[in-house]
Length: 306
Image (tube, rainbow, N blue to C red; front, top):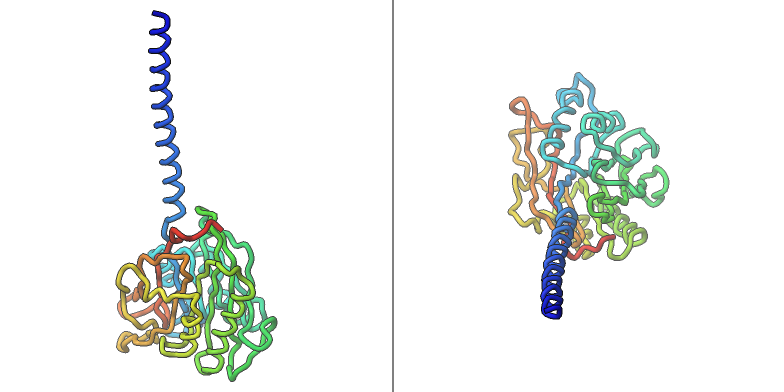
């Protein structure tokens, strides 16, 4: 009897432990699935030329536009974006209205004078690890102009951590010259060289900007032909939303047929959707002379933790 009782107790214990293991395993798998879901959460990024500061008497004054620029960013839940043409007071306005932070120095004095190529981000979602701004010229470490441009041209870049997943990635944001083709091509070359020299070989990179160049332009082709970047317009899981063109010139009568604003990504990201946003206000007014380009992205399953 004692042997039988002991054996029955042993069997019950085995079954009991088996159940515990199963429960424990199920809980562990659930937790791991939860972490995987967090790391795969998509987020919205954008490139948006917001048009430079104009005084109150101007028909497209910043005072009349700023709340609508902020509203576009807020309504479409854009949590990381590259701005072009923004001056210091504009950036401060957006920082306050959106509760976001930004990185980047001005193009004229490397501080606050003149336009910026600032990168805005939600500090609850991202942490800046390092950042800098350089000039698109033969002397990139100081304010300077080359290749026939009449304005300083800059690139702002930053290394970020995505706080939910711990993944690190880089963002580059640019505004190429609107007149000099030589400058545009050299700007593409300089940025690709900077990436090659300052980021790891397998770095996750988001490249944003107003290139003042359409897809048939050599400045655009240099970026694509490098082999590192893909144009989100072409790789979105859903068909592109909105018009093809991104420049509107504040006009409702012209067809926005020039696609000059871009979001490029390395293959560490998946693009759920891509769009050109045509939000307007008070009938026939756009917040800027460019439409913001938006992409909903996430780190893909092959993307390493760092």
